[in-house]
Each structure stands twice: as C-alpha cells, then as structure tokens.
Image (tube, rainbow, N blue to C red; front, side):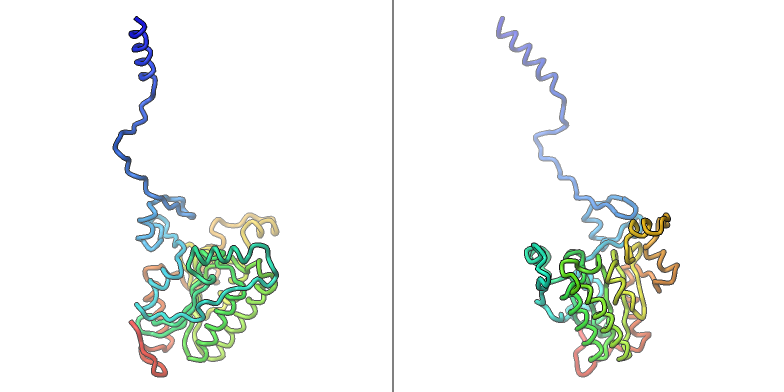
Length: 297
C-alpha cells in the first residue's frame, strides 16, 4: 500500500514539471546578431560581415578595422607601411594609461590608432592613412599625430596624393595638451602638402568627431563621407544644452552635412575604390612608375 502511494506521488510530481521543449539532442546554437545603430534592424553578424559591414535595411556603413579597409581599397600586396612599431609614451603620467595601451596592443595587433603607408589603387600610387576605432576609439594622441604628419610630409616629398580614412572620438585626453597639439601639427602638414601641389582626399567614416574633425579631417581638397556616418565636433546633447534648441534627427549625419555643404560627396563602400581611383586620375595622377618605383597590383 505504501509502495502504491509513492508511485502516485511520483507520478503527480512528474506531471507538474512543465515541458521545457528541450531534448537530449544538442540544440543548434543561436547565431550572434548585429543590431544596426541607425535603424535598429538585427541581422546575423556573419551576414553583416559578409556584406562588408553594411546594413541591408538602411545602408548604414559600419566600422571597419584598418586591415579590412586596406583590403577593400588598395591593390593586392601593394601596401607598404610607414613607421610601424611607433608607440605612445605617457607624457602626463595618466593613471593606468600604459596598462590600457598594452592590453589594446595585444587585443588589436595595432601599435596605435592609425596605420599609414604607401600603396596603389588600380595602379595609381598614393599615400594612405587609415584610422582604427578599436584602439581607444581612434583618439588622436602623439603617435597618431606624428604618423599622420610624417605621411603628409612623405607624400609632399615624393609628389604623391594622400587619402585619409578618418574614424575618431577626437583628441586623446590621456595625453593632455600633447594631444591637442596634434591638431595644429597635422593641419600644418596638410598645408605643406598643398604647397607641394598634391591632392588630399579625406573619407569621413563613422564616427569622425572632436579634434580630428576640427583639424586635418576637414581640410581635404575633396571631402567624402560614407552613408549614415556621424560627423561633428561636439556631441548632440552638448549642443542642445548650450543653444537650448532641439536639433534635427539627422543632425551630424553625412547626408545632413552634405546638404549643408560640408561634405562634397557620399560614396558607398562598394564603389569607394573605383571612385578614389577615378578622382586620382582626374587630377592627373597616372598608372605609371614614379622615380623608378614598381607599381604593384
């Protein structure tokens, strides 16, 4: 009798356990999703990467690494890096700055937030600079400023154009006044490139803000932006709090800035390479050797 009672209790207990929908067969893992910051659409991250990080719904162009950008832009095996291994010091002894940089170098494989060098785009030789937002949001410190300045100076000396892909949160606060000095330093280098009668094209990508926008990024002879890129100096909340007005929803987006005349053209990633080569050719740069250097790609 007691045995029968236990059977009844056990049966009732099992009946009360809700069905979980799980089986002994291992479930297929859910794909990692990417959520677009502009339209909030979610797609599998693998699909987003396969689209070169362009949202299929709103055409927002996501952030690329420096290596990804170079792969999409320059001729294969043509890129030769400048000033690799250059690393920032800690000029104002900012707490934990050295440790943070060491961790970022290990995580990203970068020495700092910009990669500079020389390459060809459809056979036309150019100096190119690419900022990488993975490294302290590509903030401009002493190394970023120095590498950019050297790139401009090298281009002026070799009679080459410069193409700079910008993506930055602005000046690097961990380097204090040394960081702010890079704004004047890079702007002066752009001026010297102009004196050498060489073309400077800036490509503003998401986001380009702060001291980078207020210096060399705004000084291009031709200013290109990627679709839906955030471009500005101060942030929306700071401006609204200062002027006590509500700003348009598309304020500081590439399309808004083109309408206001700040940006010359908006170019999609899939046509960026051909657009850049066409602009270089239009300004007289040819698919030929210069000073005996070999054309790659």
